[in-house]
Image 1 (cartoon, one colour):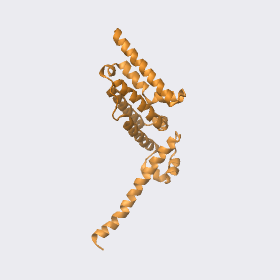
Image 2 (spheres, one colour):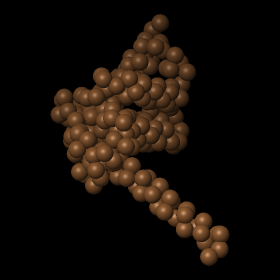
Image 3 (cartoon, rainbow, N blue to C red):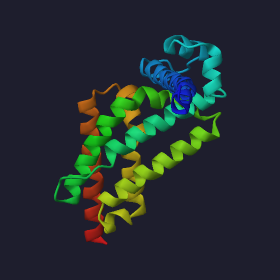
Image 4 (cartoon, rainbow, N blue to C red):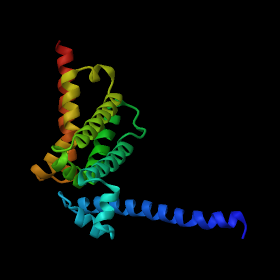
Amino acid sequence: MTRADDMQGQIAPIDGRRQRTVDSRARIIAAMLDLTEEGHVSVSAELVADRARVGLRTVFRHFKDMDSLYREMSLNVGARLRAEVSFEFTADTWRGRLVELVDRRATVFEKIAPWKRAEAAHRHRSKALEDDTRRLNDHLREVLRLVLPGSVAKDVVVFEALDLLLSFETWERLRRGQSLSPAEARGVLEAAIGALLANQVTAARTA
């Protein structure tokens, strides 16, 4: 047996163990995402372990506690949200791009709602989740600012009102608190934003 053959025999088991570790971690994260998507707001480690088909000790070997696993879920969902709301707009006018933004956020908020509900239920006891939420909101605000012309973006009242209307919290209120369908909720947002901008133009003309 050559030295190369001998080394290959030593490396293969190590690589195999490493791959099993990677696979186990991926299954745990996937289980967490699946369970929260199904509506489990408070997920136990036992439930995650059972769904991932790993031992409970394996869960805590990869994640020191459930807050760490919730944070992994938050980062995963945040990355998905950033990707879906930040790609290039196609409309020629800023108002057209704003309509695109409403549609994008409505679509992605509807997709990620179960995960955001689970995150919100645990955010009060996790500084990491609070920080993740703040950074994500800052990103969404920046996307909105880039869509708007300077005169609108600099109007503090109008900008903050638009940011509120285009937030996940507003979408959640329309969908669950007011029991509107996705199409109805989107229609309310478009009407409210249209009225807000019309009032801004009227105020500018009469100033």
